[in-house]
Amino acid sequence: MEITEDHHEDDPTTALYQAAVAGSVPSFKKLIKKYPLILNKVSLTHFSDTPLHTSALLGHLEFTKALLNHNSRLAQGRDSLRRPPLLLASAEGHKETVQALLKVYPDACLFRDQDGRIPLHYAAMRGHTEVLAELMREKPESVSLRVLDRGDTVFHLCVIYNQIECLKLLVEEVGDNGDFLNARAGSDGGMTILESAVMLRQIQTIKYLLLLPVVRAEAIAGNEKVMKVLENIPRDFVSLEIQQVLMHAGIMRDQRTENEKQPPLPDNKTKKHGKKGRKSEKIVKDKSSATGGNWVEEKRGMLMVVGTMISTMTFQAAINPPGGFWQEFNTNTTIRGISYCSETNPCFAGTAVSSYIHSDIFRKFQTFNTVCFLFSLSITLLLISGFPLRKRVLVWLLLIVMCLTLTFLTLTFYQGVKLVQPSHVGTSITISYFGSYLLLFWLPLLALVALYHTARFLIWLVKKLVRIICLKPKRSRNNMSNAPQPTVRSPEVSSCV
Image (tube, rainbow, N blue to C red; front, side, top):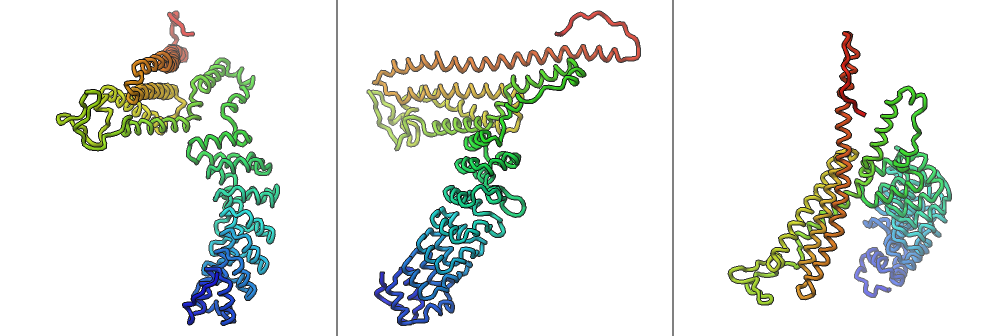
């Protein structure tokens, strides 16, 4: 495109920059013909960058070639942020412009800007794989250059900016080189790229990195660092999936499996302690398997998500009930001969329509929904309170509250169906069948689960009380036997087995 009008007869430098923005090669040739030294005087102007910076940034290939043909030293120039034209073209992904600049001055691949980054870094950050390949082909040593101050490698930048395709291209370039793939950011022992991917919760990147033998071997050897990063990320479905990936790769081990693999006590130690050792072993087994506390502790994040989801559902149902709201003040609404809105009983704007038409059902719906909302908040409170979920009392309480929450959620759904079911489409038959299925299947199932866990809790409580009652006479007899005065032992009236 040629700039036909020249409004800067007295300022040819401004006209040159305008031609660079437009990418107009004819305008540039006219300026060069009229002012042969105009490119040499660019450094004397107040502009912070050169016309080549502008042309490279916008990807004007022909204009860039014309500038380089007349003055190739422009490729070495830097703007006020110490950026060469090659860096701008690389950041924008202009492959052909990058190739033209590399032919003239390939050493610009190693130029750093004021942030300590080189063109390769920006190409990786922006996901320009073709430009990345060109830069690596021209200067392979640029892959080893780190970002100044931060110490990030180009692999870290790919993970930080979630550019997995660029990461794969770099891995193909360096091969199975642990010095690159397991390098830590910074000089103070920062994170590896796998630890960064875990921290940023990039599941696809984690799966790809664990396919590399050198990364996987290093992660298994130093799994405590990966586990420390995993502990500091939020507990949700993503973190649970990351946990499963690490377990499948052998970096993280299932705690339940580890408990099963623990060796028994040595024979000499068992003989030494006798019944006491067998009793303690039985207590440990009872705590780890019978209580179910370990399972609840491991599923704390998932239970938190379920409780939050139910709270959100019930909250939305409370402020957006079925049937919607009256849009305006209404005093004249009659349905099937029944007047719901009148002068004496007006329907106010913003109130629920169902509260006037189906007042009884609406009242039950809001009651069940409110109770379900409070129980779901109770679940969240128990989980965030910090109480250890290995205690049988807390586990029982959490399960009972969860059963009550699901019960009232089901009842809320039942009343909601009654609100939206039209009365002329077999309402009585449909709802009666639905209510029968609800009462005969779902509610007894929840009751059975609650009774089962309540029975286990009561049996445990009774055993604990019996154990405490039996230990008191035994301790008193031991104290009497250790006393210096001789005593006459009376026959035992009862014994605890």
